[in-house]
Amino acid sequence: MSFPKNPRLMSDDELCGWARALIERQAPESSILDYKAEINLEKTTERVELAKDVSSFANEFGGTILYGIPQIEGDLGPVPKSFSECGISIPEGLAKRIEDILTDVIVPPLPELHIRSLALEKGQDKFLLMIYHPESWCKPHMVEGYKEARYYRRGNYQTILMKEREVEAAYLFRKVSMARAEEFFVTGNFRPYPKEGSFFRVIICPRFPLIQRQDMSEERFKNWLDSNPPNGRRGEWVPFLDGWVFRGYPSGNYHGKQYELRLFHNGGYCFDLDLNAVMHSKLKALKLKQIKGFFKDMILPYAGKAFEYLRITGPVSMQVNLHNVNGLNAVVFPSSNAIDPDSKVEGETPLDKDKIEYREETSVSEILTNQDKVLKTLLDRLCSAFGIWHSDVSQHL
Image (tube, rainbow, N blue to C red; front, top):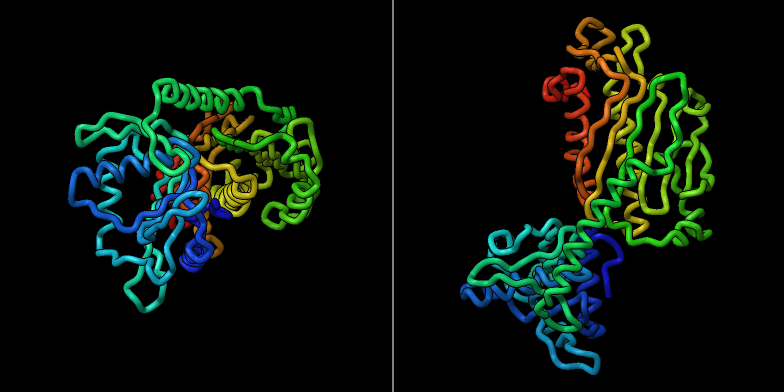
């Protein structure tokens, strides 16, 4: 049984309910689920075993280890003992110690490790320790420490040593996924910029979409789109050759619209905006607070929502483009600008190019759980293009 969604987004109550249901119906171990009666880390062999188990899930399809569940042999493999026999005490600092061990001995570092204590019964010292990692986007991971230097993957019920050809295939998969993302930025079916006007474009491309074209052609996906307009905006979704496009009702210079959003069959995402919507015409300056609003309220949340619905995980590349912007500056008005209009912060260096482009790397998990960090990274780069130190204006954004 897999998680219904990213466990990093699930509450403690949801995870406890999920774990308790596994125990009560005696769900067997599988290629994505492992039970352990207890966790001990005093001996080197025990620390090596931990690294093997966690890296094996990351190198295969991802999965969960639940410590505090003793097992008996069932018809389909090991199954939990009764609920009354489950649960362990978890000393303070155990999660950090586990993370330190795994960081020291697994290379490259695990990118989406998640450790959580789950209280089986409130008010009692009865917990499960959950260690979860999805299929890793930078596999294969080697256990390189304690005189180990090997790769492991998860079998049906145990950790298995990877064969040379399996390691080679994992490296090739990583290389090919990066090449596909790079190609998308160049050859993706993006609408050409109109001849007149200035425009802002954000493209987000996942490395591992793991979805099929037909998944986005079914009626239920269209129903999901219609019931989830970007930030509640009014407009309509219509199909195009490589996916779906949302055209908002406000008119503008971008092919007659103020903005447009595209979802591609490979999980890619593109947002285009007529810069007149966020421009101070008298100063010929980009209003950074309004740009931040589109990032925070529309671009990042909707990309995350779509990735979660389509079950896309792993790294994403984000590219920001400014088109036909030679001479454009940027400006930030503090909240008190109506009283003191001269207190605005204006860029030191208006753009001297028609096109500006920059790219950042993040992950779906970061977009879903740490959007402020992703937003800061994007705005840092944008502010620096105009000679503005982001920290100088962040209190006004």
